Amino acid sequence: MKTEIKTPLAFRKYPSTTALQCFETAARHLSFTNAAQEMHMTQSAVSKQVSQLEEMLNLSLFYRTPQRISLTPAGKAYYIEVLGILKHIEFATTNLMSHSSNTEVLKIVAHPTFCSRWLIPTLKGFSKEYPLITLDIKEEVCPFFPEDQNIDIAFLYGDGVWGGMETIKLFDEYCVAVCQPEYLQGKTLCLDNLDAFTLLQLSSRPSAWYEYFKQQSISVDGTFRGPRFDTFHACIASALLGYGIALVPLRLVEPELKLGTLVTVWDYESKGRGAYYMSYPLSLGNSHKVKAISEWITESMA
Image (cartoon, rainbow, N blue to C red):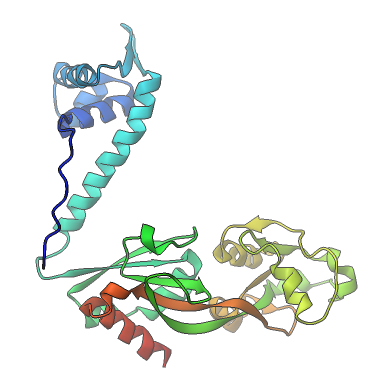
């Protein structure tokens, strides 16, 4: 494999990780003494590390008084950045230590609800079948842009067209209106009186209820009113608690419908505008780990 040669960074004056750790700990405790106890160092050693960091930056990170210390505006901004850097170092180190030299990491991205309710159950047994492939699953709510992602496999909802990606269709989406059985007690299922019901809304699909009724050639008011949630998972949880009626993909609530903890309100399944796909970068088409999960998912679907 050809190693890509990167252009060296022009700026080479970096603070030591010890200095950054001392600063982060002191900023978190707002005390050099407590920071020293946590770091198993002397108070003067911690203070010296922070002072040297301030000297290098040519900035004051703390206000100092005989009684206490507090962060300056520059210190607050730097603390947030340093915290992210130290967490990244910790993650990279533990991630490397957790894998042997002959293992591969399979990086997966999926929507939280799809991930917990379909993907994870489908992947049951995968790690036992492929012990040298470690799954690294990231849940993502935001829109997916392949060029911004460092992933091997993405499970996406849409039209199946993503630049630079090969896609395999999993299934179409059909949504059903569901609620807790007790929610319907004492209520008449009359569309002329939709105000008697609370329609739970998904923020990313504000017209979902309108389209649900439009597909049935039914014209009703009030389809845009109701509490809004970021994910199907929150909609489902709210329906289970009796908050109202949720319009969610049938595949994602099959367990609750079988158990009877949720029931369908109207006997209609609305077809979504998109479908669910398994997608991977074209450059990884011959990758062993990508082939392994593609075959696993395909066989599970069959």
